[in-house]
Length: 306
Ligand SMILES: [Zn+2]
Image (cartoon, rainbow, N blue to C red; front, side, top):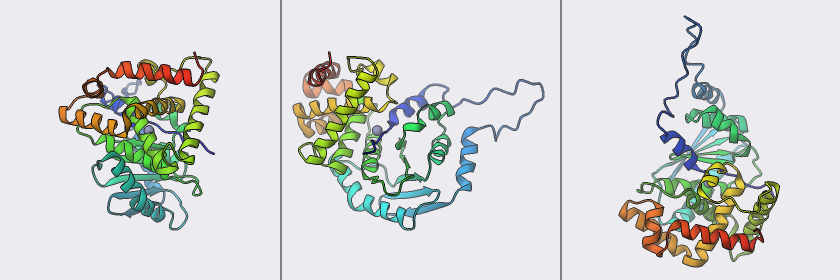
């Protein structure tokens, strides 16, 4: 099975929030009086022009606006939208007990190049996009979901559910949510919508595939320890095994506190307008860091890593 790989929205929010990050205007051309036309040199503008030159197709429904860039089989976008309305949106919003800011915009791209243009058009830097573009299937930026749909036979419902979960979490009225938790919740939602819960055959297969991926990545990387500390997490955010490690850590969270524990944590964050690290001890009686460290140890033992 083709493994699904995702980016988190947080990387981009952090990037966009960095002082000066969005004001990265190119330095004036060195040669005196060079006067290079500024517009075509802006990657986002070039990307927008590429997209404007492609076929475009819009489908609107109650909760979503599907904007397809490129060529897709007849009825493909309509079927995806219908599945989103009938199954994905109700299930994700029920699981999270919340709805995103509506409508959700879903942009579909028929090639990786077109997806690259879509991300550049959002103002992400060329370096940032090109470092990761090979691995991206879905990406959420603000309220917009970007999805690579280059294989019409591939079932995108898990990707849509995952990215919709990010969109719901991004519309919470809280100052910050921990990156590992954001990614883990989106992956758990994806699993439940696409493959079933942890006690169903599909869900078990999903978790086993994650463990296999994490183990092979750990051995490939030559480390015996899962790199789950915060610095390593951010450093490795772009590599998919890290997301899966977060999700495996979240399985331990669920064993201990249940799905209801997540709801308590989110509510505490919303009511107090506090970040995850602040709400965690108030709800569970230990620091988030202590929980993650203990869960890492448990996971490491379970995976027979030192
Ligand atoms: Zn994600």
